[in-house]
Image 1 (cartoon, rainbow, N blue to C red):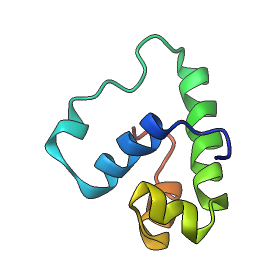
Image 2: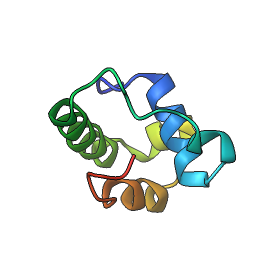
Image 3: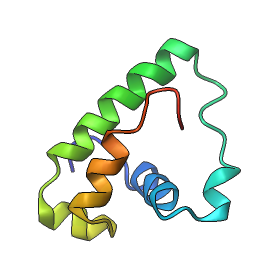
Length: 76
């Protein structure tokens, strides 16, 4: 993959689908706010760079990837 772990992509998929268990997942309490900000910027950008085949592998559509990438940085 492009540096994103399968676990992180699974968590993002749960958030995109609005599954209840995704809402109780902490957003990285061990990270500083700046670390969280840069991680979100980086991973959301990487999500847009995934091919259609890679998106299929993680079970999300191109539209879901775009919606995730457009989320404000302050939202988990």
